[in-house]
Image (cartoon, rainbow, N blue to C red; front, top):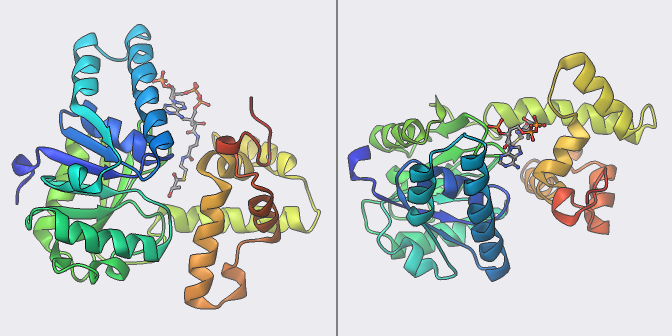
Length: 288
Ligand code: 3HC
């Protein structure tokens, strides 16, 4: 397989990450089908594409022709078979639960053409935990985007011990075609580069807030003003989703049994209250 053979991309999941990964690929000229079990999420994703593209055109950031092509390249379906049946490349951006991902990859192995590459956008889980659910582990890798995926340039590609060099190369080439800056890791490590660094920051920020040393707002002001980050750790948690932070912590803790990997009391409390950040209009901050 070469990048020239990649014509049709299936994106699984129309949530925070999936809808923007799908649109990025459509704008790069690929035929994209985005699938989700939730019709509501698919409708939201389609509505986003229909409003985002004209806004970009009126801001002078996109030509009308690219916007029109982008919109005609993307479609949405609840049917995994329809979305993945003739895909050359699949990017899975479903919920961060290993069992869900393993089941999906087993289904994808059955549904997709044998040469198709299956990549996971997981935030933390290395693909060797998933690849053995398929009969094509050489065609499985991590392809990790950052939120918002239409804006953030970096994509981490992780070549596991099972991943062929060809698969890693096609995935890196796909990053380039999508206008992204791909970084290739040839050793698997849980959380890859960026989320490990971010986790260290978040761990300390949540510890300081849990101890009552400073409020989330004060910590955010400190981090944005002192370190120049565009968002402090709590605003960023609201942005990426407190549910995601909770699931990541639980997955990690189940694996390591190390109490420091457990979601912090603040995250557990927010998760239980359904205050998951921007997506629920309330997290550490309130949103219109
Ligand atoms: N979707 C698409 N585009 C968006 C957007 C969104 N949700 N929010 C902002 N943008 C675009 C705007 O259209 C604008 O584009 P333009 O300059 O080309 O016109 C640009 O981003 C700047 O937007 P704004 O001026 O409205 O707002 P800000 O300057 O505050 O930028 C931000 C918004 C880009 C989100 C910025 O706050 C930021 O970079 N925040 C940090 C994001 C971050 O750290 N991401 C990584 C999270 S970790 C992760 O994703 C890991 C994963 O595993 C969970």
